[in-house]
Image (cartoon, rainbow, N blue to C red; front, side, top):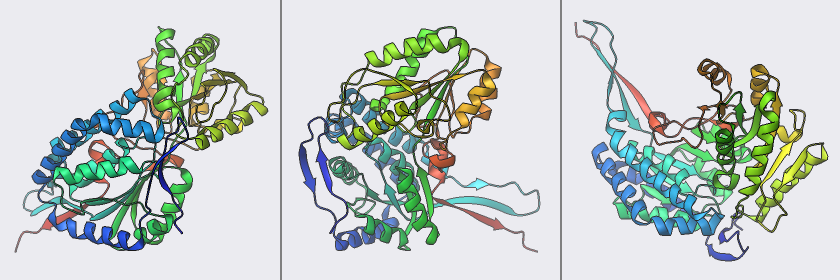
Length: 448
């Protein structure tokens, strides 16, 4: 029996809208064989760049349908779903524009009379992508765009609650003109995924998801010596050390917490505020966060239940909760937890939803201590009017990304990824195309 059910369950109503058949072993075998064959038919870098431009065009043309599917599958507000598709357009266009330069031969200077040396980048082959539900199109774009540009082929296993997005995206790659097998959607089981990772034709794996899923994939991949990229979530600190406009800083804090109804791995989740600003920040932040309590549901009732257990446990340990209201199914009201210290269990957890923790810091040193006292290390935010302090603190934060005096500033050019239990490897920017290519050294000696 399959251990995964692929179904669209509208989180706003709990209604099962559609179900999709889980793949048989024969379907998985055929998909892998097709992806392996397609590696020889993806063309030149210029050919692939042209196809990626078509993928971008089709995302733009089908924006309304893709966004509506995302809303139906995981409850994202429509405007944000449309923005997600726009970001995908940027990503596919970015790699279409830059793939040739990123993949060009890289000469190495070894001195006069010593012959020549060059690093040549070539594709790995078949890659397996395991994607989450919170950004059904964007997560695929940041994995697929650079790797298709590099000449790799892709087996894509999407989240079980996003099967309609998965099918729509596969159709886009086919309609764009990529050869059959270059991008294949698979409704695979856990057992089938393990078998794919073990297969020698699969040369690498990229997963965005939970720590538990990442550890399971890493264990299998390690046994079979497969390169992997993992992005496993975070509990990003938002550090406020000084400001000349507290209202503007609070507005940024609210935006950073409520992105995707609080269900973003790199959303700000722990707000660490210098004591002179703490009381005013908490008052303003609480008022505005609760006033903007999401009208959209979380991705599922199970997600809301899990967040409720975390918040209730924090209150039981002595935290104080200010809330916008009561739970109703998958709808979760915004909330602010104060009186939290690094001794609380919740301080070391990821809150996936519109709940925020606020910590008081005695000084810069204490703020950095609190920020780094976490198993995660994905993103972070530093607000200060002192440029030297900003540079100093950014250097000390244990994270893959630091944003100074701004939020929601991601772009296709900027590498995305983390450290510690947030995973390893990078997506987007030039580093995103470097993860699954063979950087082959070709050394030519002078004949004597």
